[in-house]
Image (cartoon, rainbow, N blue to C red):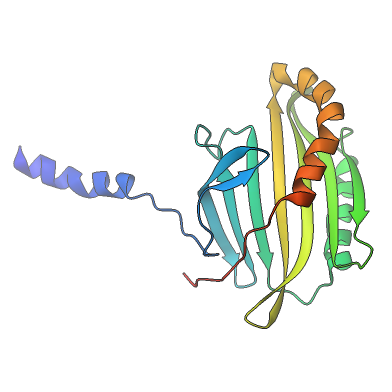
Length: 193
């Protein structure tokens, strides 16, 4: 019996020690639109790209309604070039996703831009997910090095909730854009992991 317990112990430790790497030295939680978002997923897919995703306490990355994301790119791209990549991606997606719409807002000095967009996913001819996104692009310096950061807000609706979500989006969009503009972006300090 003790052998069985001891053989099971490493798996128990593995499942209970589910720490999410925190790359940016940002204190949890983030407050956006009067709600608290906790870090629940992060990745460093390559040497030049970091991503951290924050969710409401009751939600999980696999099935969420709201999410904040911070992307950090070590790149020589200017803000307008980074935004152009996203817009080209959306134009390409529109060929297979008729819901895609986007709008670009640029700061007068060209140092910041916001792209807000909507997209969908369908299965067997039925819309299963609709997603509204606000991507706020900024250039930042970390230890005298230039980076592009994207602070993103995502709101999703699934299946039978899609129609009410789309109706409400018309009224909520401006409020969410203003919230993103006024949102105090967290200061980023890179921690290597």
